[in-house]
Length: 320
Image 1 (cartoon, rainbow, N blue to C red):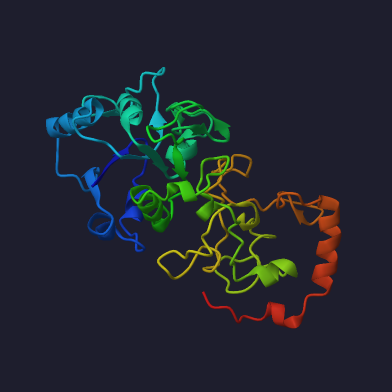
Image 2 (cartoon, one colour):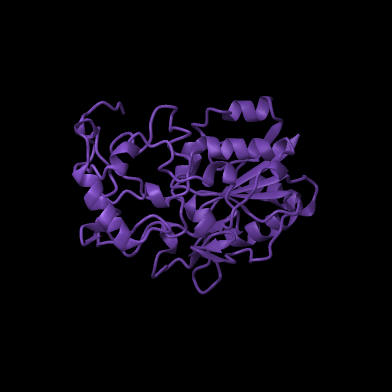
């Protein structure tokens, strides 16, 4: 039996809602087929008040063996490093997290807030929020750069706003079945299984991207979303177009630009006020380009590509 404890700090519960919709495997499969025992979850746990406190204390003392600690939301340090703005079970949540992390076999951060600090950690960050082991791109976070769980792993980060439900459940299965050694973590401790390729991989609009055949309207079934709507698919690491949401679609398939929500900088502070898309252009070329692309060469390529766009690239033959 694998004991799992799920706690939630500075969060909107979006990753919990996502997790409850997992399909491959779903929550029932995690329990019945993979032996995961959910000790407590803020939306599923029966214990209240002093019973929750006692459960947490028993995990810290070792009376109850804690195999996996899952944390959703930011660590709130305000005011002045005390954490009193986020109290849980009669003490600052950050104090529980620190002590539980020290005894957990594995620590898993779910969602942008837990991984990088997310929206609450945006400047000026009044809640003094940070992720478990990162603050945006800077390694360290609440637990520190050198933190390792009892099993010898850093915090396993599953970013997203929210994270795809199957990313969460499949990593939990890998931990429960002892197959985590087969999964490589990248520089941000993200499992490369889900975060090595770009969101653009599998996008049904790639032919439009190649020919610079753009659309300037949301929800359109044809046309690339990168040039005029600021889609971040070419710069974002995720498997959203390989592992579809609800087994049906993705943002780009539905005609909406990728927001780049699995990257440390999300939400991007350098955009125009009130916007989430980077639609700024320089000499007709998007301000932000895929990694390693030379702006001058790209501008020339764009001109040639647009002039040679075949008529069929403009036709509406993709399904959402």
